[in-house]
Image 1: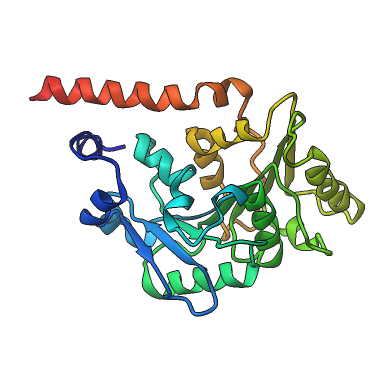
Image 2: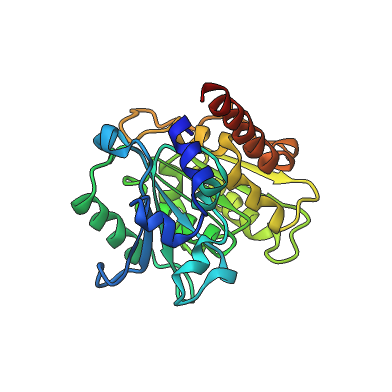
Length: 273
């Protein structure tokens, strides 16, 4: 996060009302007739980069399903930014009122964003966990030519045809200690992709002993966004990045790393005054 951004977070209470005042976070209600209500987070330097700015779509889990839009901000990329993580991207956070995520409705939001915001259409990413993990795979598998890369955490898929999932860089992660959504749900997708030879752009990790909630820390580590941004739609090969790795140690330290960086910048700001 830029120094001015850290100062902003230090000088404001991190609530939706304060964000809206500074145009960092805005609620979009009823703007897409066949879609979801959603939030748009605009990064601090957006108006300097605009057409070069990536776009991230985050899909929450079942516990956040509601008509109350604030529930979708309980965790995820926007919450990571609120805590101090620098994510230089537009972040779209749809609010699912209930039921499975609809790829069509999500695509309608993406198309609305293309009409109303400047961003890099070759750098669109989707990630989610639990119900949002299902939504991520269903959305990416339905519109693989619109998504540069996707990360699906502790989910599965309702798709009958996995061929679309093989057309984009995809990272599937599930904990073997997950009691809410069995790791078998993600393994079924991987096995199905193997059967049709669609794993060239796939990587997957079964994190030993990790619980359902443990994977939420993916949204708070910088490596997650580094991995996403390594992929672009205009890459002719669209190879999946296998160099950046996220370990249990990275997840365990995710919150602490954010706070450490914020503390360091706070000291720098104090020394400059």
